[in-house]
Image (cartoon, rainbow, N blue to C red):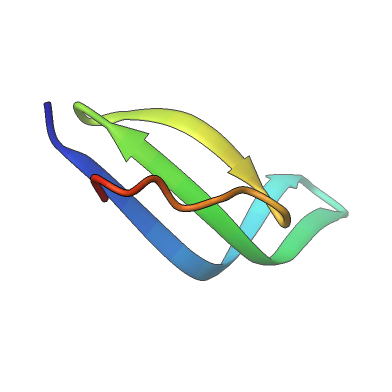
Length: 44
């Protein structure tokens, strides 16, 4: 399994709804979680 984390990302959820300074966690090429208060997994 490969895990990646993108920090300080700007995510456009839908027009007019934007999450800034968010973390995106990807596991095996799929989005596992997105949010401002997401912890980065140790294997990322």
